[in-house]
Length: 108
Image (cartoon, rainbow, N blue to C red):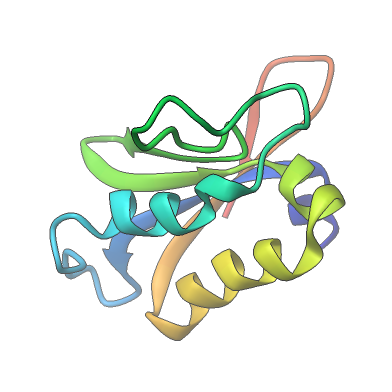
């Protein structure tokens, strides 16, 4: 668990059994729910959805994913737990990119 404390967690759109997670817009939905959690310097306005820089929909090896940054944990532990529990409750695979000064390292 220490690696998740210090690194970005990639929640992959792939179950532990290797099936693609549905619905197809799950990553955007999860990131949308987390859009209110952001650094104080980043305004949440403009009249349209702006994702939080701490919870971003993306792709990983061609799969939809959500990248959850450790800063979310520092700002709002319950929001961090919501994302991690979302992955666990839906049996989704995760990868952790360790924060280090050297090259990025992946942990399963």
